[in-house]
Image (cartoon, rainbow, N blue to C red; front, side):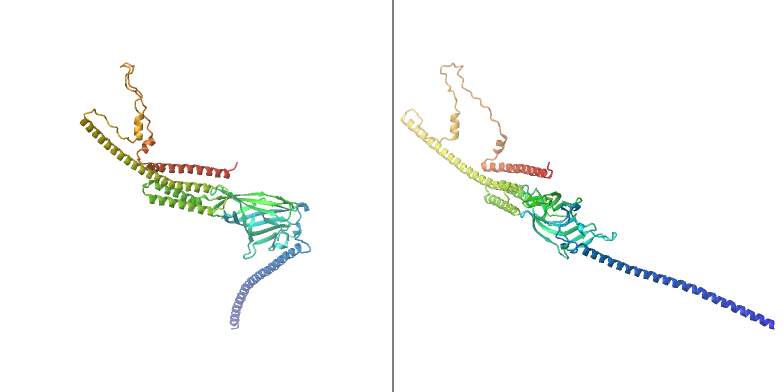
Length: 508
């Protein structure tokens, strides 16, 4: 019994030991998982803390960086170290200050032919070196310092010589800045709108090209103290979307224009803008309407010569319309002392319209003259009939008297007959040699024969002879002459002015 009891006790103990061991192992495994979780949480917390500390350090570094910029500005342009009234020294601390200039053309707003001016908007830039403004760039961390006030540093005294009006742009803030580089370089940039004078040569208007200049010079500093130079690369830039309503910017030319006065020689820069006028607008507005008015005036040549009201109304209307067109053209141009190409065109067109009106006056005069001539012919015919009747009655009466008296018959003297051109022509064509045999044999007494060569036929006269009246002939001739002369004028006009335009475009 005792042995069985002991064996049972041992089995129970062994079973309890195994269960306890399993429980302890499960607890150990659960502890390892918790540790891993806690380590992951601690790692994430450390990472977030590091980022926060880094951001804080960067904010502190950025604030220190901006503070350093302020200190540099106060240091280099402070009243104790910098005097803006004194110009910077030149190369090697000798010679004049060199200022490089470049501009960007943002917009060309208007080009006025009447006022001879143009409005332009530009970005104007100046670059120079002032060794007094050098500073430490903190190992490249400071590329440049930016200022928005121009009264803090020395500025070149540049002005625009041909300026009429100008203004700066201050919306929302003044459109300008100054950049100071570590080596002492200074860049000044500003946006300006200018109205500049542009003397124009309008001899070829509207087939012309105009050269408008932009002149920039120093006002007070002579070339011994200040020299302006164009920037080596792209001194003039033009926006790609530049559009002008009546002109095209063909090209630009940069040059120098130093001027000498009683007070010295001053540095000057010049940029010439070459504008070509767009001809299509003037072709539609001026040339085609004038040509149409001239052609309309020729319609009167095809109207009946007796349609006086229609032809007068047509001639006067076209003449007044052409005069109005000429006046409107001249109002859009300045009064000049020379003749423009458009003046030649409008003057000739006005002459053709006026000539058509005068042609009708000539036709009307010829028509009345033809009617008067017809009346004279009728009168002459009546006089001829009356004379023949009177002459026949006189002959009959004389013959009766002679027969009754028994005398020889004698022709009574006829009344004077009106001499006409045909009578004179017949009298002049009588034989030059009388037909008698005075002293000559019968075989030699031949009449004198005159052989006249048949006149050559003129095709123009033959064609014109189809029209019985002079007024009709004038109309027919005008129908051909006016268009031909106008066509020759067009050939001469366009060949002359287009050839001159090509010469100006491609000078030798």
